[in-house]
Amino acid sequence: MQCKNLFTFRNGIQEFIESLNDENLKEKLEIALDGRGAFRRFKNVLFDYSKERNGSNSEIKIKKAVLEWCKENEIEYEEEAK
Image (cartoon, rainbow, N blue to C red):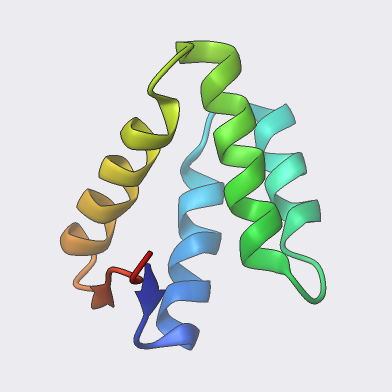
């Protein structure tokens, strides 16, 4: 997935983090966003968290949640070709 407006997406990510109740997850996500490769690390933290909580198919669940969140916040995105 590639976001078409990085600034809007980055601000949205911060809002998403602030909306979480799990302080441990919030801290991990904040750390992940620091520096180069931030989105990859952010995604990995979410995947690991989801696997711990939900077991199998967590990647699909996270992707659906992220896409739904982008739509709700009017953030344009496009799927990356595999």
